[in-house]
Length: 129
Image (cartoon, rainbow, N blue to C red; front, side):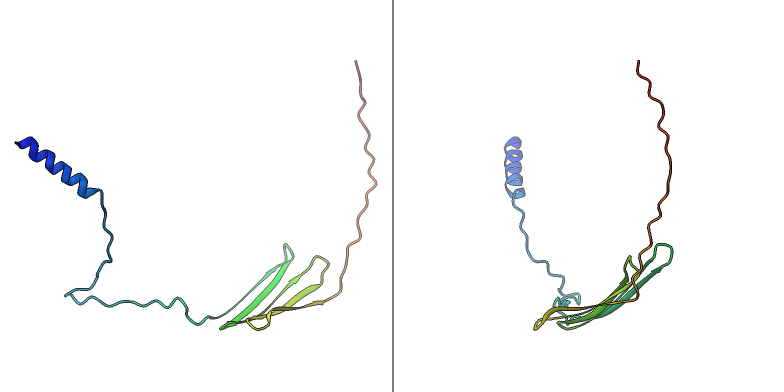
């Protein structure tokens, strides 16, 4: 008799244990809960940022500035190119006109003359046996 009870209990445990019910969890109740926190994932986009790098050791000089107000983005960035000129790009982007950029170059381009060396390399003697 005891073995039949164990067998039935085991069968019920296996049958019930195979199904996992997922339901929404209520954090409210009679203890003062029930307040939902609404997160607006579509908040009005508005930001402004800028940064710059001035590294005389590597010669890396660049800046960027950008402002967004709604669906309109305006900004600019500049960098010193290898020839010594500064390239500045002013850009705007919106739903009506798309992305537009104006590129300006300023400064004098300079190119260093190559340095030639006249080195004589003597080949080592080759002996074949």
